[in-house]
Image (cartoon, rainbow, N blue to C red; front, side):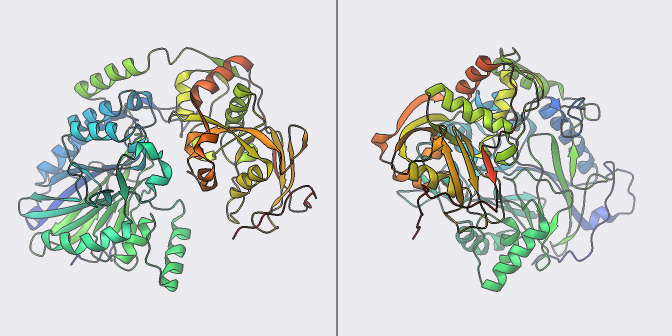
Amino acid sequence: MKTRLFIICILLSTVFITASNSSGEEQDYYYLDIIYTNDVHGGIMPTGATFMNPEFPPPLGGGGSFATYVEQRRKAIEEKGGYTLILDAGDFFSGTPIGTKSEGLAVINFMNMVGYDAMVIGNHEFDLGYPALEKMIETAEFPLLGANIVDKDTGEVPPNINEYIIKEYDGLKVGIIGVGLTATPTMALPENMGNVEFLSEEKVLKELIPEVRPQCDILLVLTHMFLPYDPVEGWQEVRERQTEGDSSVEGLAMHAANVFSDIDLMFTGHVHRGYYEPWEDPVHHTLILQTYGNGTSVGEIIVKIDKNTKTIAGYELPAERGAMVTLFEDEFPRDNEVGEYIAREQAIAEEGMDDPIGYTNSRLTRGFAAENTMGMLIVDAFRDYYNADFAFSNIGGVRAELPQGDITPRQLFKVMPFGNQLVKFKLKGKTIKRIVETKLLSNRSDRGILISGAKITYNKQLPKWNRITEFIINGEPLDPEKEYHVITTNYLAEGNSGMELLVNIPQERKTYTYDLDIQVVEEYIEKISPINMKPDNRLVRNDQSVKKTYLPQTTIQ
């Protein structure tokens, strides 16, 4: 059984491990230095800390600085008689040219060079299809984990994927169970999933923990499940589930730690929300750690383990702020070998990506649909390209903003890194209304849906599925029985992001254009520059508005 961490350990500086410690305490404890990443999304090249200063971002060294940091920490922990473990919680390659254009191999090779010990498979590992994932697994010199990823025919985990591993350090056995995100098939294109499916995290952990725990002294869970943006709200949700007797963890790592008592530490990801302090479960004292992702920082925790009892006696964090260290290039100069490799791969992947394709007179922003000028531009481009009546897309597909000034392919790739294909079909007005209503159901969120070709007013005080009070399309009231020409991405057309109703549209009525979304938007930018995009009231919330009589009443069983 693990030791309960009732005492919060004192945070030390980045030089807290030194060879000068003469207390002899090292002889009584194992020191396991766990360096972890998540949601790197191909962010191994040098970049700037725009999250600190958008105009003059401090330089970050990317994978070269990460390699330097790892080498420094390895030497420090070895001088203390300890050991290093390097883990990644998934979504490692998709999101940058160097990651996508190399089909993930440039990032895998970088991870090989640094010496990763294990990685769990994230949802974006399926972005290029299952054969590409298999090639990545074959190239990796470390195990890829996914205990809940099984072959549809055999019900077994594929032979090239591990359920768990056991690492041994001078008699200390560390078990690592890897669990993917159960919702992955709803986030990936069906044709990219190969012949695998995902079992629930709860089911797999319930079966594996009793099997692995007796084989190890310390048990880690490496998973693409996630900690919430707001830990207070997240814990309230866990408490509510406890009250209701709900043990389904449904991707929320905080709940999994509360349900399963034998986990010592969890390393999570998916939502790009970093925690400087580990989340400690109030009941079982399991520690959960997670970084912001994109390769801008590294996470680290040094676990102190009693050699006699093989239980956790405490932990130390590397920086004054806590578990995460920003990879500033001046603080961690890029490793020559790793840095040169990344530079070569980057040059190949990014040829011509800094040539301007257009200009915007104002910053194109993300956020709620009513203010999301970047998203508005994207769906306007879809509709314009095909001369469609209506276009729509999901807010989550807009991954970055564009600053005022020149627009380059490099910048646009950050906005739209996934290469979705565009799909055309005809839909009746009443079906279009249902599509929009689907994104207006939540009483908590008001993010909405990206639309083009319409002006919609809605009232959140009205019953679900009937909140739209006015729907003008092409300057005229929506006709529930009229068929309109509609355009969206294949990601949504195949039922992802809550668009299950689109699955019911017969495939013969869908036209897959083979045009990539990013290419269509790039042409549109060239066509309309200079861009003067601003919020235009195409989607308006008005809780005093009254439903127009031409709108149909929707009944959902």
